[in-house]
Length: 231
Image 1 (cartoon, rainbow, N blue to C red):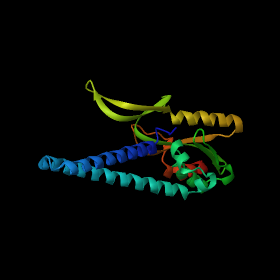
Image 2: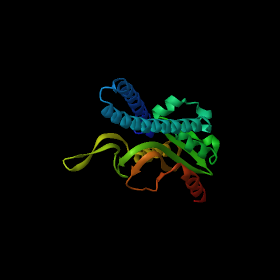
Image 3: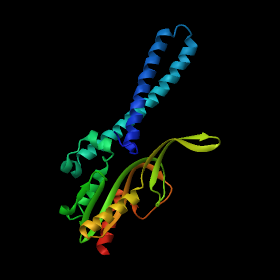
Image 4: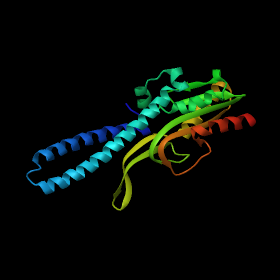
């Protein structure tokens, strides 16, 4: 089952939906061309409207497809893929396609033998100059409803008004990644005796109403690793 909170779930489902619409509109245009002689003026207007809509949809389909191809190519060219050989379909379904952004950066920073990945939690642990780090990866899409202390966060989709209030037709619940990583490093400390600095790397197309020192982008990994070395 595909990871529904990932931006790739949104992108792929929308591409499939757009492709179906293009086929339907194409069929309608074919029907209009056959029966246009009945009401030339009316059918001509419908034909123009449908052609414009179909063109926009085809452009959107092409752009989405190009984005997916570029991301897939970057993934297949990464050190992460060369090491773990997780195929594109599996990486997309698990929502870990962008994990290479983290792994490749860590590979250039860390003591390479210390790098470990827990795929069930999507966590990468590593050490750098006697400092230990736990990086939890999450790919998200939509408006994210959640706070630091909440047990669960929600990815909100399809905004709509109901009884004068803004609600969301689709909500996807998932565990608060900050708390997940905190519990994870607590267990690691019991097992290893090492103190781990825990961070959550967020990628995707999302909106979060708050910031937190433990929420970082892939491009901040070098910074936190260097700070750990200085401290």
